[in-house]
Length: 67
Image: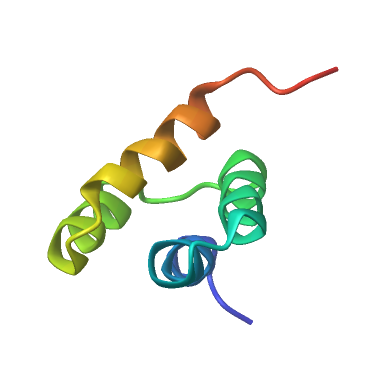
């Protein structure tokens, strides 16, 4: 079983490299449900060359979820 931060990074990798929108939604769901080291995820995203897609993740995460 992956820790929450690693799980988010795994799902974001699918979004970053295969443009999988379901993977982005899964990353958001995990980050909303579990404590995630967002600074670590951002640093990893920068190293991977996907800060713009990380920003997509943060916008989705910061958006209020529907009731």
